[in-house]
Length: 319
Image (cartoon, rainbow, N blue to C red; front, side, top):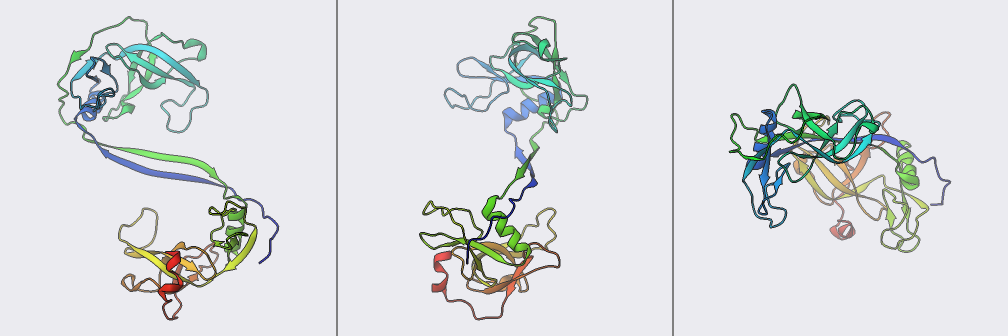
């Protein structure tokens, strides 16, 4: 229970990725289905403005709006920014400009990519037109990008029913975040201790609460924590949930139990999976211990110790 020298701070690349599925209302359905058919639709607001991309509620009055109009695939750049280093899944794999384009017949601007030879070839007020994707599915990516266009304004907005055969009613948008995570001094020490099959927290010098995992500071007292304290290895289930939906890339059969576990000596509970017992026999107060796999850097799960259940009074403050 002494302050130890700081270990090397850990860093690791992490990816958070999931598919976002949403249904479409009549306005967005018409807009995306229209793109599939090379038709650009906007919606007329209560003040007469044509809004592209269309919205379902008036940004001024908040009233529902449904009056669809067709605008031109040509327009004018209102502002822009050069992107010299495109990232993964951006519209073009070479340097391009992000542009706001007010399509002919629209009163608002649409954000997309402009395929241009360089920043010197882009300027506010330049005329552009849509370059349609060869394969269109009813998504914003049906607009492959914009390209320079020498013509003038081509049309005024015209009423449109918004009706198409085989309308798009829902989309799946992949969401992904790539970043480098650094757990900091306190959690680096915690992770390094786990690889030695020890669980280490840090004690607040003011309130004496032991934080596991440690945070480097006490959120209650606002002071730094440096005193390391080994806790556990056994602990008490304070609360739990039964998981019935199998997660992708997680090789655990459902149903299984995930629980908050107050390790002996810790001032708050951490979470872990409970194994070695039928899921319907897990309960509050169950005494558990960690199970390590060979070469594992953290407990695979927690199993019952065989001790009598802990009295509620001993862990009620940790729920």
